[in-house]
Image (cartoon, rainbow, N blue to C red; front, side, top):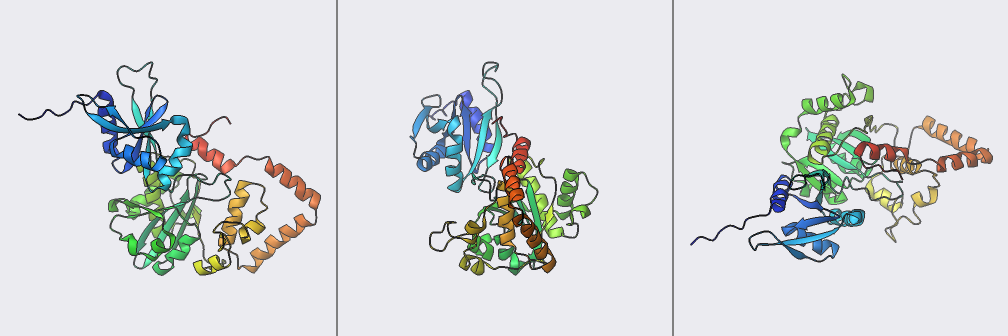
Length: 365
């Protein structure tokens, strides 16, 4: 006699329907005051977070592995899951349980990956997710910081791609699914989390239209990137991925910033490491580095700008002279400098606050 298939509870049927849409993620399923994980997700979550793995009755005497934590602990546990190399889908209750007829409606409100997780609590560094698109030994790249809305576009020869990406140190890189990235120099050197994107999304015409539609412009000439077809394609894929695959928004992105090579000094990875610009050779931290010595910035935005300047030093004499003149003018008037710093320290991080409002993550505090 054929054994009967266990009958699932309505809750587990709902979970199964949502999980099938996000097969390569850990699904955090909101149940009241807890986020729960089930089956293989529960085993992975329990191991990474060091929490108890239990079981839940799934109807008809079927037991389902279960691991969960309080919803208010999400900020503590989410980085651990993502840093262990996992995508995480956050599934929230989207209606009041008291008003629900039957089972509470739930939806995935956000998918978090290494490139979209904000780790820097001071806000003084950018955290980029990048996308690559190549053709005829040329490479185009787009780097996006979800926390600030900064999007940088650049192009270079294929053999210069590693050094170009090093300026942004992306934690995640999007590539065409046909790319064998494990043998690529940029991957061996930078070791980012890699996400493969379906090849049809890398359509240059559609990607350009995606950007012009977002910015409500006829062309991208005003941003200085109209001739950068490879980079524009990479940016278009980034926009598609964040909106469609990550359930995020790009509403806070107000401009595209071209990366120009002319007028900037090219620093290879060997030089940056040995000069200890950002990381100490002894401690692997920032103490004693050039950044540590120079960073007297009063705001997070200033800290991010200083990092970008150190990553791409000027070699244009006129621009260098202008910077020196500004520094000299402020140094000659210490009272004005101190007043300016006092005022700046009272500012919130406007870039990140505006991004949080746009992403629906802002709160009164």
